[in-house]
Every structure is written in structure tokens, then in C-alpha cells.
Image (spheres, rainbow, N blue to C red):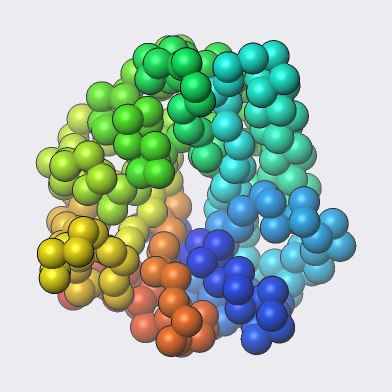
Length: 274
């Protein structure tokens, strides 16, 4: 049975305007059956006083930090861009260490002018290799994901495999069930190609109904084969982290959204809800 976490970035408008506190959010995740949480590193850069509060709330609710999403761009066109990306990566790893995160999920990569996708993937791999010893010494796994804001760079299965190969195996994969849709792939069909590299999973849902392109929807109501992926993970005896990535919303408060969707996610691994 995997361990269940909840990503938090989509609820940022709620805590920025005071509708929910970080403490209340973490308490709600625990009450809904979550064992962990997955925040962005930028939350702690923007609010340095958040780290001690977060650590207290984690302890109060018996939660771990499954992963921190370290948002940086390791693709560069000049020395200044290269240093900026490396600096942000190091800053993110410092926050991972402060939160005792299991996984440093390094995302946010995008192409910049004059850099080919192949060169960009090599830059990502090289940047991660540079910090691999630091991550390992702090008990963290370095990981990329199939990242749909950059479909030509690091979203397709072949491109994720290339980055991991170029890293010499020090980089693992966050398997995001929804993002494959951006490159015309299905998560269930790509699973076997990537299974041995998976250290963490994001479960989300999308729909293309209405002909307006894909858009986020409530878990279990869209086109992503999440239950099938859950059964494949179960068949392999997967015991790592699985994170709920609910859609951003203004119509439902975070605690209600988590309370609706996390039990459904858990049920897929218990063999029901299919």
C-alpha cells in the first residue's frame, strides 16, 4: 500500500487572502487520511517565517513532507541564466533539508532562446548530477516529472527517459498521470516503460469535453485512467508516495476538496471505486 500525500500549490490564493491557514490546511489533510504533504519551495522563500510554523504543524498532525516541488529552470542560454537556475536549485534543496523531505522534485524547466530540446535535456541532467551527492547525503531522492508546461522538452516518455539516462541513473521519476495528455500519450500505456524509475506519483484528472481543449476537473470525472494506473502500481507492490493533485478552484474550499477526492484516490489502491 502506498503512502498518501496532498499537493498544496493550487490553494495558494486561499492562504494568501487569509481564507485558510497553513496550519488548518495540514490539519485537514491529516483528517482526510493523508500521511504527507507536497508544497512548493517558493512558499518558504516568499515567507521565511513559514518554515518553523510548517514544521510545528507537520509534527502536530503526524505528517511528513513527501516531496518539495523545487521550481527552477536548469536550461540556460548564457552564464547568468545558468547561475540563476543553479542558485534556485540549491535554495530549494536547502528547504527540502529543513523540511526533511523524502523527494526533491525538481520542476519548472523550460526552453530558452537558441537552446534545442536535446541540449535542454542535457542541461537538466547535468544540473541535477551536480547536486546528486548533496541530495543523497541528506536522504533525498532527486526526481523529474513528465512536465506539461514544457511539452517539447520534458513531458513525453522518451524525453523523461533521456534525462534519466543522461543523469547516469541518479534521477528518478514523478509519474504524473495527467500530464501525458499534453503530448498525446496515456498514462496507462506509458506505465510499463517508466515503472522501474518511479519514486512518486501525482494523480489528477482532465477532460476535453466541450471541445475547448483539456481542462482540470474533479478526480474521477475526467479522461485520465487513474484507477488503471493505481491497479498497475498495486500489482508491482508499490509502497512509495502518491499525491493528490486536485484542480485549482474558487468554488470549493481546500478542506472540502481534499475531503472529497483523497478518499477516492485511496479507494483505487484498496481495489474499489473503479
